[in-house]
Length: 152
Image (cartoon, rainbow, N blue to C red; front, top):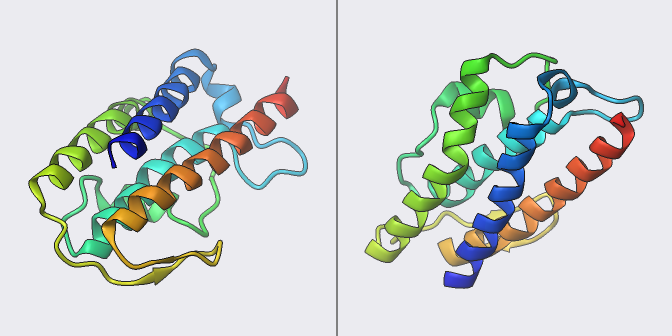
């Protein structure tokens, strides 16, 4: 799992750079032909990782319920984000992955509730969830690259 954690960390560094270097207006812009924005994609990957790994393992997530409700699968951005939300997600990009790796190494993920993703991949263990998350975050980085191109 070490490689999966490393790949996720590298992706999160790229996402952090977007949050840090992209003007807020551009982060929140939804270009014609798109359903979401750069900001939503970044917050969504943080929330989804917590749902896939922690919630489906019966563990307490490290993100609050309001963030989950706003950015889980099926949600659409409302075109707003407070500076506090932006700063929170910047921190969560790294703190959630650090905690996940530590919790995994401690062996806290003993149970897992099987789940079939919208990509038709059935997750049967926390290892499946961690590996699928790498794929999921890559999809959203691709979406962000498309959004950035559409904005500029």
